[in-house]
Image (cartoon, rainbow, N blue to C red; front, top):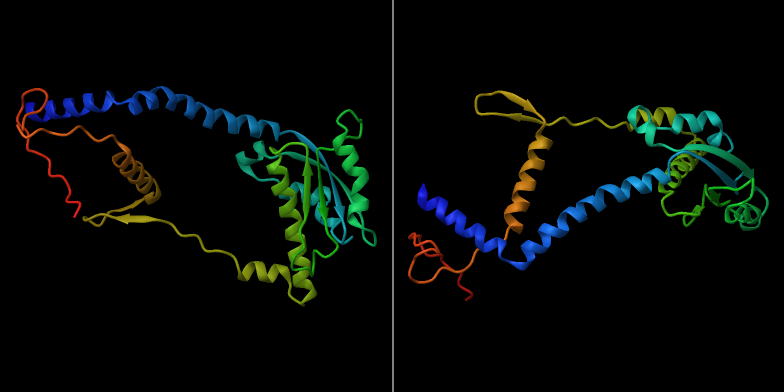
Length: 243
């Protein structure tokens, strides 16, 4: 036991003397703090009420952005606390160029001092239903409005998909029922036949441990004397054959 402790102590001292170990010891807490604080600040900027405009080139998606649909698109449970409150101004741009229809709203987006300022704009092209290369455009003042972008894009795509299905004589409700996913629950079976749930957590712990083994610093070379730095005999290491 004493020999093992001496070997472990030597390995530790060899590791902490490396410049990379000292650097990571000082830099790692700063890195972790940044990874925790920055996403929180970015998320905080995306919270609260957002006034957005939806310029619909199809002119058929008004119901998708009604207050009722906006409320149903808000996540339930604790996730609701992090969802932005959307105040949507719908613009029917059917029969006109979407770029021209969106121009005055882009001016309101750029003017932050205006009483009618906007936080974001979603432009839906007139070819959204049948165009293979159709793309919606999302305009905002900050890159942190990704939650608003995902919420508006999800609402629009959901309505577009349902319209496409109805155009082909398919009832969206029936299709949702047929295509619903069946969840998979993980169960571990021990040698005694006992069933344990939560295999994902065990996998995560094993993955972190394996990653630690992979990135831990290697010790120094052992001389031919077979003695450690503390005079304790230890078996020589076998170096891999490069040939």
